[in-house]
Length: 97
Image (cartoon, rainbow, N blue to C red):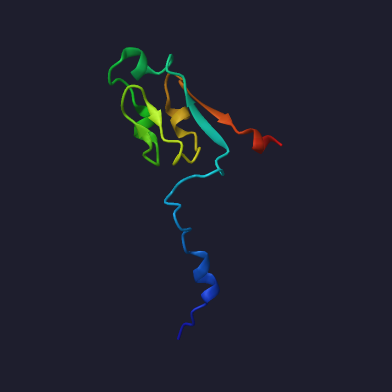
């Protein structure tokens, strides 16, 4: 017979109201340069690899491309996949101290 440890179950409960928001724990933020973005420059659906590869699904496939920073985890996959290098990851100052 298994016994339930109430202390362990408390660690598994999600925080109230978080719903996947990153808050202030993200180390880097993606910044889009519209002058380099293929979709923005051509003003038509052209690339959207950032949208396709984003594991959180928070990149909009529209012109201009936007990233919902409220839910972005800062993984940098969008910047890695961007063929025109229009997305750069900017480190937060707090993490450099």
